[in-house]
Image (cartoon, rainbow, N blue to C red):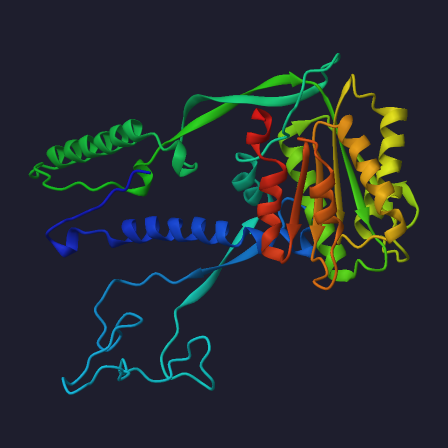
Length: 391
């Protein structure tokens, strides 16, 4: 990423706001990436329009300065009379840091909030993920966007698409215009420094060509039994909602199927899947077998790319464990990729995550475990990683 710095000797000629805006953009992008897990796991993300805005905390921008008495952690100054084993104090008192009890006596960092829409959020993840192992089938009805090609320039965009040469040309053009104006006014046209401005920056305009791909179906299977409490169900729905939005954004004409299960499973519509709550016992095999039946009736593997994603807390009725493992193996045989996400599992018992990893030896079986909300983004990257296509 190019960085334009204005090092004018005369402080009056220095436009400090240019550097501040650049640092601000870097802070915003860094904060968005750091908070992706928390944003994607919000239940409020479900069913919202593309204009739904999410707040991101941003640390305030401050000028660098020396501060008396604030040494790095582990650094302290003695009087020269210390003996081996003596503990030195760094001179600071209770400053309100983590672990201190009571109120602190030092000011905290400035933190404010910026907003980002759901569409802008998807821009950050759509480039890194894709459906793995997408094969060509007999009929090609899915339209995807192929590799992007540069088609002109624009004044806005992302840093990787910065057109450096065009940016410099825009600055030179503006400089020449100013010189002409000075000459016409009868003034000295000698301009010693002429820094870049925001208006000079140009980005490549990218146009993607449509490309036909094979048919694909996403089958979302969710455990809605009693062991899946509200926080687990919210997290599962967030996972599936982000998946559906991402897939719909990157691939056109893709099919979605939704299955909910307790000890019995049923195919439901999208609204019921994301909003209806149930309870009861758990037979994982019921959800997997329903997916197998759905594939047999509507999506023959010779014509369709099949992507089942299953979400559960891994708590299954013991008498169903062997049936569940056998069903998962069968579904893997006809799928391009089978994703198993275990959400907030119990720490008091061994869950199905470990049994699946030990007994399901299929290369297209991908399992992830989400122990806390922030792990959701990493789980998505693992399941929809481009590198899976090379295995």
